[in-house]
Length: 91
Image 1 (cartoon, one colour):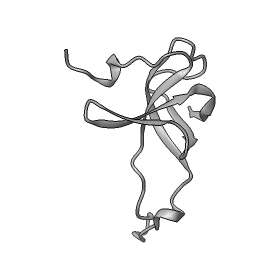
Image 2: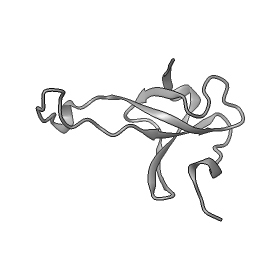
Image 3: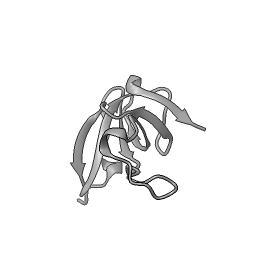
Image 4: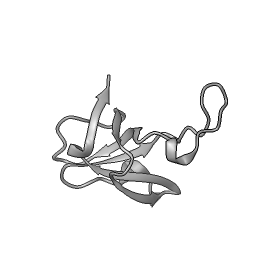
């Protein structure tokens, strides 16, 4: 069986998120040092646990840079967050 993010089902109120890549340069091409990069990050929800109420798969969400558990799954770096650790959903 081939493992994909869709086959990993988070438990409880957890969500599986793929973070957007970090921007290492500004719109004008200036290099942004690591200590000045965004503390708040965006990503896409790939899967949700059965107790998640406010987000669903393919929602774009906003969350803190220090939250979540980093995992490597199907060759990709993904993150598992509790639903309450998400700051918002883009609509």
